[in-house]
Image (tube, rainbow, N blue to C red; front, side):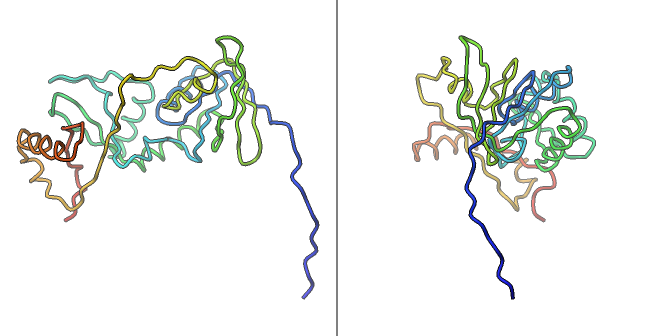
Length: 244
């Protein structure tokens, strides 16, 4: 057997690749997707950037697929959020991938199949004119006064300089604004996150019969025992999700 011939190679330093656009959207969660798709529909050249290798952010990666805030509160709720929300509700509704929970605290919650939403995101972005740059980490923001001029991003294939006329910070934690040196607001007291869990093999009829007041009382008692600051929450059953 002949031995494979090899040679020594070394990484060559190269200038950052330059990408130009009208609008650069940083963050490909549901907010960034909405901004990018709406801007593209207005005829703008859009680049959508995210540090993750996939689109969708927490909207497709959370443990429970839930939209809150698409509808008004009250006994007769109406839709208040439109744009790509119209497309999502229509198309996932046609697939049977949505479930509306209403009548509790006068709030309308929309549960969705996360796999179906992930496929909708991939399909919709692929059919748009939006250019995608995933796995890109912000390294530096160049600004002129109150205006960002360009961003330097690190990718596995090398640095990228992104130049745009306008930027949308959809990172969720003001990463772009912070890196650019702009003033950022933060709460004077700590903000605590939420905890979600899924219980499998439940009796849906039993969930429907739960005494909400008793549940709230028990939550308050248990949370106090464990020193938790949040004493309430939502409990609901996804249709057809309970094990037989």
